[in-house]
Length: 132
Length: 374
Image (cartoon, rainbow over all chains, first blue to last red):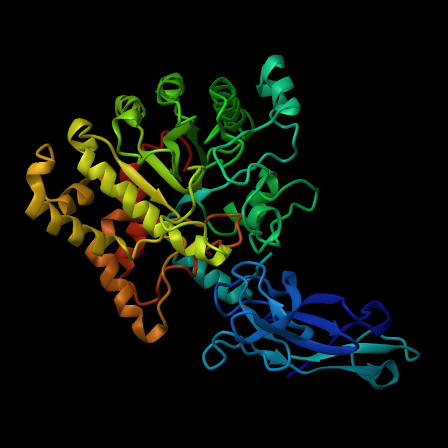
């Protein structure tokens, strides 16, 4: 896997997202409350671009008339057929055993650590980085 | 916009066969787009009183449609503004070009006069939206073909609109919706079928509409998800009406295309109709052939939204398609709606390539007389 610099951290505040294109694939990168997640941009169900999806929460119920809402902002809904994916596991909510979107490691690295690589970075800044 | 990796995109394109999409939805880009096509009298009415459709929720849908603006793909809003489906250049860039569409059938859903209670306004809207389709879409894009929108609850006015468009190569079918004031086979609607047969135009029936009744025959459902699952039952009822009213005996050249209704319910309907016909044929003596044969000779279905059994059960879907007849199934995408099917992925991988080609192109080419474009 190669390291890809997505953006300076300052340009990806919580709630923001980016779509990046590597040589071989498109990847959707999300900042959820300060944590970064990266997944393939292509929905494994019907092919929708997941970077255009909605970040929502998990609605669950243990019986009619009862519900609980959790995981706010951690569930991604495809912009086409609304399949839901858990950003922490990549797995579909409805069919976790069979439907999964590929994840890629995403983290923040200081520019100083990246300066040795071939990216144009400033050593004073931090960057969102994806290994893909 | 969705992008395949370069190599995969090239591989897919290299093996593509021609593609007819039987369900593309252009939409007015902004509320005043019809103004140039309505008379001053009807434009004033349009902005002063507006639509009064046969519907329990006159000003909107009974349920939010899960996606913005009546159920749009979230990535289909044109960057230049306006509504999804409202910008031809963006439709080309996002869908027609990258997906290799050879011919596209346009089905405008609103406002068209469909289900409108004011008969004169309904007729004016239908004529206006048909003129708009020709001027703004068909003239600019030879791959696109218009459907004749008609105020179908006024069959005489509908027949006049069909005859006005007869012979115009811009139009390839007549468009009805599935939920109507009466069952669509009833004689009240026959002037529409007479004019369509005379013009050589198939009748396309797109799901939804304005019956004025609950979406299910057992009352108003609580959830949108129930309405999405209902279309097979209303389309079963309307096909049953077509068969037993004798529409196809009276109009033997009539073709009916069901759009967005799914199709796995169709074989069991045909078996059920054959069974009751064998026992009660004398109630409807004008039906001289088994209903399954009537359906097989006059009805086509479109793919989107296909039933999607779990991968181990995919053979069931292929069996169902064989029972319907693979020559009766045509591809549809529903662009730009949220349940859009990507033509490169929608058909099962395991399907025979010749069947795939028939569904993508050959069957539609036999149903529609495309006089223009690719």
